[in-house]
Length: 234
Image (cartoon, rainbow, N blue to C red; front, side, top):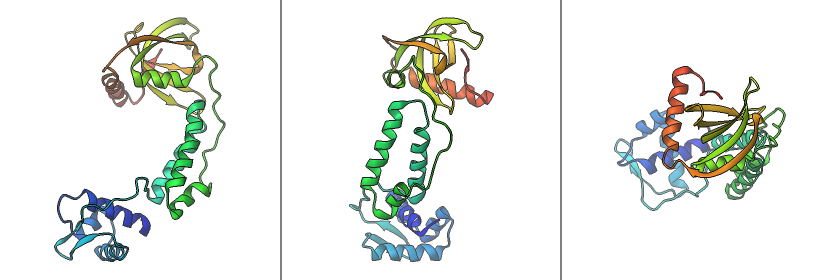
């Protein structure tokens, strides 16, 4: 672990500790030597971080010390950069644009050493950008998931069967080539996957399934964990 990351993690450990914590305990959490922790604490105290305590007894962070609201380790910053790069390759135009705004906001708030991970453009997500489907608006799908609103879709199955379904959308899975809408299908009376590129129309219904979304997602995840795959095809 880089020293900058380790200093940050020590502060986080002390912030969350309910009682004095020894250098030995911290060293086990961070998988470094106890001597390294003593040096790091001395360095933090030299930076005027209000750490109190002594060897063998433990250390505490004096109340009132706060990190900047957007403070990430170098690895966490790189994870954000890569996540936003992957988002830019999805078929969801609104999320593509949002990912650029996220990076701009983070870059404006980070101190110079951490900002370098964003401005250096050293991490990339490769592959073609998925084409957005013509018949649906992903922002409508995501809004319906948040608001727990039922949708009506015209859908063509893998076998070419055309049906109109009323679904309770609970998740969206983004793949390189397309996206999949996961929802409770009232026609099939179960959770089903709907490929976005097979949806020919999507309409809001104004009907809701309040307080059912979390339960249905748990049901979906439990089925995935048992079978090793997501819900069945539509």
